[in-house]
Length: 227
Image 1 (spheres, rainbow, N blue to C red):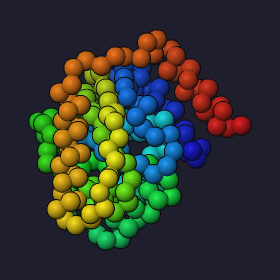
Image 2: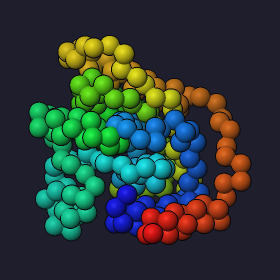
Image 3: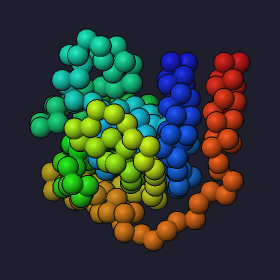
Image 4: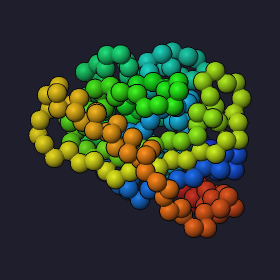
């Protein structure tokens, strides 16, 4: 990881684990290397930060084009994201996403294309299925819980509500089709897997993963990276 990314990761990792008691399960389902898509539900502006902290490897994001025009955000956004037109994904955007996946990068996507106002899952846009079908890379479904309470739509201040991230088993693309209907089916399947994570019963929690050890791990990690 770059030092800038790692510095942000460490800062927010400690913050969310202390302030929001962030709990992550299923992280072993995310491949440690190679191209992979992490597809998550979208509840709050916190979601990109939370999913990034929950991952043990660097993430690349797809961000709406408008964010790249905001002076205060432009430099930060360019460091971690590439632009996408949420309404009509351009061929260049799809090509760039596939290129990054082929380079072995992890891309975080929110298939719904926007935040859910009431917390219910929305229908997926075709973009995630298109990228998955063309790249043939595995997709890891992820469920984010609690960010809608930590930073609700319209809220100005962060609340100390508990946040949880659950990673499901990877979805492998076994067929060679790339047509529109196949892409739409992949998108629906991904949202179905996310829905299953939401309806599953309580999962086994990582024993001994307390705030102190989370902070110690984060601090040791950044020291290792600086060697």
